[in-house]
Length: 219
Image (tube, rainbow, N blue to C red):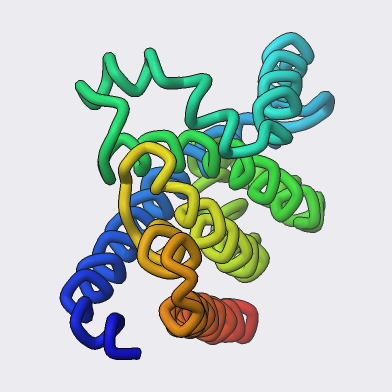
C-alpha cells in the first residue's frame, strides 16, 4: 500500500490516459462504425440502396477484420499507424489502432440494430417521397436509437478491455499500470486497486448507456 500511495500521481496519470484512449476511440469508432454499419444495412439485397457487390465486399471485410485479436491487430497495422500518426508507440498510436479495431465491431452492431426496424416504417417514408438520405437520418437512426445506444454501451466495455493492452505499444493507462507497477513487482494491492478502478469506469459507462437507452426507448 505504501508503494501505491507514493506513486499515486502515476496512478492518476494512468486513469487520465485510459479515459483519453477510451473516449477518443469510442467517438472515432462510433462515427466510422456507424457509417460502415449503415452501408452494410442499406446495400443489403432488397434494401434502400441494394447493391450485392458492395454489400459482399463490406461484409467480407468486416468478417475478416472483426475476429482478429487486438494484440495481433495493433501489431499488424503498425506501418499504417506510422504513416497516419507518425509513430507506432504512445497513447495516440494505441488510440488509432483501437479506433479502427472497434469500428468494425460497431459496424456489425449498427447493422443488427437497424435490421430490427419494422420495414413498414421505411416503406411509409418511401411512400411520401423521402429519399435514401432523408430516410437514413430521419427514420433509420431515430427508430434504432435505443438499440444503438445499448450497442455502443457494449462497445464501451470492450474498448476499456482492449485499452488494457495499450501498454504493448507504450500507450500507458490502467492496464499498463497494473502490470508494470503491480504484477511485475509482485505488488497485488496495486493490481487490485487498478482492477477496482477499471470496474468503476465500466459500471459508470454502462449506467450512463442504460439510462440514455431507456430515455430513447420511451420517447
